[in-house]
Every structure is written in structure tokens, then in C-alpha cells.
Image (tube, rainbow, N blue to C red; front, side, top):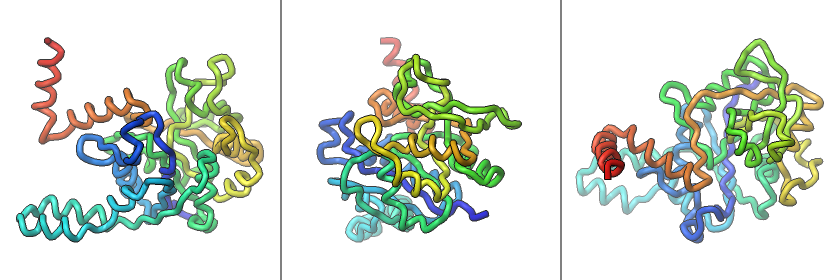
Length: 290
């Protein structure tokens, strides 16, 4: 069985929920404290053993490429100023092996994954959505899922339960129990169902391990909701003919694609910082008193 070496990060969307901030700045570059959101995703991939990363880019996303590129002028300035820690941090970002391809038309997540076909070259691979940041101090969510893939040798969806009123925002899974209480075999999936349609509250949340079979299925999938090619529809078809699993990953997940989720991520990551946490907590407590 081939190991998971490659990861795909779709990052071509317009980020309309964060306008006007995203008119000229990619939503993936919005900072969680002092680090762009997409860097947390890239770091999770690297910490999970991923060797090569493909970012599916789009219009006005050049800032992402610049962020992970070298910046000689900045490095020389930091060197002259003796700011060694910052210099090492900047250099470490540019040493990551990242490839880029553009999704020319915004036709959904399924179409974005299709853009990665030549990069994947018939290997199982990971997909990490840039809107979903998962905090786990001991084991990244993707690494947990790779362990599951190593056992089952099939497509694995990263899932968690969401509140009933939120099911209409996600791909919702209907599954059969397995010997592992955190693992379901997928029977059906519905993209953004109404509360009445939803078969469960178990939602696919931005982490996938996919077999290369998905490309052939995606080519046959007809546009669904929003006239987009939905990855959920392809996974549903795959589940009809082969094993597809949904894994309840462990970690605090932040939906940074909406304003409240983004603010929660900023606050909670700041509170975890040894250089900021104590003072920031005191500030928040004082603010609440007022």
C-alpha cells in the first residue's frame, strides 16, 4: 500500500464573506495573530509527514506564493539588525516544497481537486481546506487520519458532529458502525441538506484522504448545488462501489471561513501564546468586568 506523501490545499475562492478585506488580499493570508491562516494548514501537513504540497490557486492569490517564497531584501535587513530568530523563521517558511496550479474557473471543490490530477500521479493523497484550522497539541488531525488510512486502505473523511442548526452548511454523512467507535463506513452523503433532510449531524470538516479513483468519478459528476462540481457527490458515488470511511478526528476545529469562527481562532491562539497569553487573558478579563 502506497504511503500518503502528497497534499492538496484548495485556495482559489474569492472569500466573499470577508469583503472588503479580501478584495485585494487572499482570505488564506488573513492572520491568526501573526501567522497567515494557510501557514497553519501547511504546517499541519508537514507535521503529518507530507513531503509535497500543491496549492490550488486562483485570481489575485499571488500573495500566497510570495509568502512561501524567499525574500532576499527582508533577509538581509534582518541579518544586518541581528534579528536571528526572525531571520530563521522567515527562511524556514521559504524552504517548504510547495507547487502551485490555478483553478481557472470557480466551479467548486470537486473541480479544484480535479486540477491536482497530474500532480498526484496515481497515489493516495490528502486534501486540507484552508478555511478549517484544527488545533491538537499532541497529534495533528491529518496525522490521525493517515493512521486510519494505513489500517483501512481506503478513502477517509475527517468528520466531527456539528450543531443541528449548522448541518445545512456542510456535507453530512450517513454511516454504519464499525469496531472502532470513532470510525463509520459511509453509506450516503448529502451536501448542505436542510435540517429535515440531514441523515445525521456528522459533517465532513475540511480534511480528506482520497484514493486516486476519485478523479475518474469527478469527471463523471454533474454540477450540483450552486452549479458547482461537488466533492461530496463524488464521494457518495465512490461509497456505492467501494469502502469510504468517516473518522471522528480529535482536536479543536475553527471555521475561519466565517467571521465568528475566525475571531474565535484569533482569540484562542493568542491565549495559547507564551509571549501574549497572560497579558491578553488579563485584558479580556478586565474588558468583561467593564
